[in-house]
Amino acid sequence: MPIHSAMEPNIVVLTDFSPAAAQARTYAAALAAPLGAVVHLVHIYSPVPLNVEYDMVTPLPMEARYMQQISHSLEELAAALPVPATAELLEADWYGAVQQTLRNYQPLLLVAGLSKTNGWLDEWLSNRALPLAHQPGYPLLLVPQELSAVPVCPPRRLVLAVQDEGFSLTAEARALAPLLDALHIEVVVVTVLPYEQRAAGEQGFHSAQHCRLAASVSRHDQHKVVHELPARGIMQAVDELAADGLVLLDLGHGWAHTLFEGSVISQVVRQTRVPVLLLPARPTPPHE
Image (cartoon, rainbow, N blue to C red; front, side, top):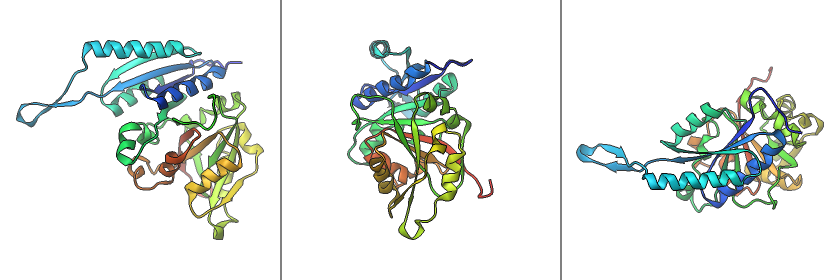
């Protein structure tokens, strides 16, 4: 039964016309249906700078015919979804348009496709949503172009990967609880530890049990993986638990500056075949 509230729940999909974006739209619709949520398709067009005299730069405006074609195509995509959906074309700089979209819709979830890429430059050009994880303060779901499960359907079991440290979720992250509970999604807490620290992990597990992400978190024991490489350990846990989704936390360190510097998040995202939900969180002292 759909969940209703004073404000209509909604999901924003940052979309284009790539195969990964098509997966993201379909996945967002599958999540929205049990909530009675609206899906908002948003396509951002960033004008190409045009050099003019005196070394000044001005943006090249979008041609009216092209704008009409894109708008019409977006409306067709929205109409084809099995849930209520809207379409919007924004001509603006990427980050400014995303911030405007979040202010306008205040979504439960921001969704984007994750394209297969070859090298960091291709990744930067194709997956423009990647650095948004912590910046907007909203949960970001990245749906890979090639999903493990076909056809696309809501996840049954999520791996929540945590470090052995205290944390708390932001209000925007906790707002996802009705969605996870409505879909009856299991959330299993996973901690990856090196061999010499294999007995640790209680602090992160305790925080996960009390983070109010989903009711199912407290019904599971902690799943530990002994591995020297956290990213590989996380993916090992996904396989061991037959999970069809993964939750990672950004504890305020910011992801944009580490995207190409070997962070655990970037390593996982590059190899995942299940959707990855990135949640904004903050570290807490051990006594909290």
